[in-house]
Length: 207
Image (cartoon, rainbow, N blue to C red):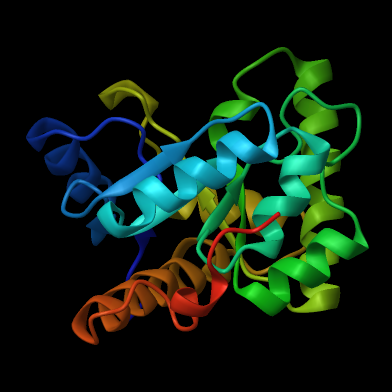
């Protein structure tokens, strides 16, 4: 039986957890810690990754900056590069970022909230998503989809988010079930073994 994982809710509460369950989500980050990072330059992002990694079950960089999209994809300590297309005229992901994301198991995150806009902008976002999904599949990079809910009314059922991916010609189960589950399992395994991520102790500060 497929289990659906919503790991990037921006607001968590008992009320949101109950609503999520009623919509069909099996596991959400109401029951574990997802930490969202924002930064304007690499030094700031690197510092925040170092500070927050131990406290997070899932570490998410809220993307959009071209250089930092790439830096996040290069860093094994980051779990999700969320909405890399945000505020951009391109998709925010190229073949280099997709390949780095694949090598480092950094999931490209598609945020439904980016679609809550006018029809012209929505069309551009979906075009960017289609390109990013194509690159993810080509380079075997993980990808997830989230409602990005900031309140109860923002929540969407997993079947609806899954359908969006499938309407673009890609695998909705990977985005709403398989890849998010792997992120949670990797985090649990790391905690059980007393490490944050495999190899993190060797990474240190990056220039």
